Image 1 (cartoon, helix red, strand yellow):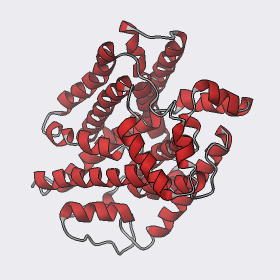
Image 2 (cartoon, rainbow, N blue to C red):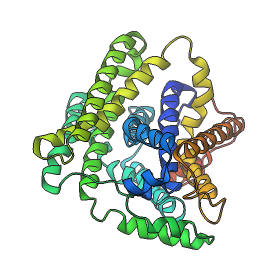
Image 3 (cartoon, rainbow, N blue to C red):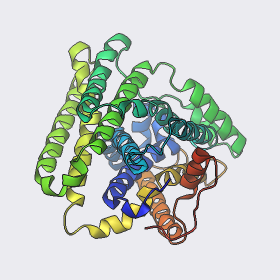
Image 4 (cartoon, one colour):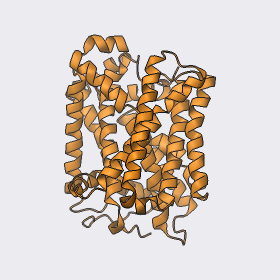
Length: 382
């Protein structure tokens, strides 16, 4: 199948890179051990500046970057179907293999690198996309909005969500072990047990990711992408509105200590802010003076799978006991600085890699297993 790499939209790759970069920063908060602490223990460990930084990240980025990346996943799938052409060169079996391989890669990540893997969830929920792709854009969009709204409604039966890793202090000792086998064992323990007592969070995330997948798919199916440049003002205003509503909902959640009933609607703050970020960022990136941003970040966005897995390996190396043993030793600002350093390293690697190869290493493996034959990889990427 011809993928027509020369037709890649570098702005989409750039938006994906930005979302991935923030995901990496937030993941490092877990690798560092900060996310395993309860609020009181974290407050005792962190100084005033680190506490302020933690609250800032919680307010503006926790969950939002993952939600934004989920929208981009649905958008990317829509573009894959478009590249397949009207002849339907992408078969149902091939699409199924694509998600099965992604799930296997996610299982590898969860066991050997980072237990809080999102790829397995993407692979499972992604099976909805081929079915939704047969629907009209309007119906797909309506289903996406309905899924987002269904999350808060479902909470009425299971209760408010709770942070998944918070309170798992045993992970600090396990991941601080100098033996890599202990890290693998604890990864398995977290994969199988971290969600105990967090049914609300799992239900909310299930509906949120499904809704954002569908909205991303709907955006890719229409003419929206072709008219962004002429609608920048409208997109910017819509993004600002979504951000404002999301921040207001976040404030409401913190004013109401125990939301119940109708107040569960405030948990829409995460997808609202994620969509707001995407619209504001998209509007900005279509400006005439930001081509240098595309040049800098687009290579990272086009090897997002490799960068995601690579950040997990680097996170282990920095924080776990078999590496530099920084787990439990660093504050929020130091962790954020290290995470930004990881993003810079991965971005530099992407630039060097694409001087010689068409696909990222993990992207190539994913494609080759999907097509059941090795894919061409040598050649300078567009």
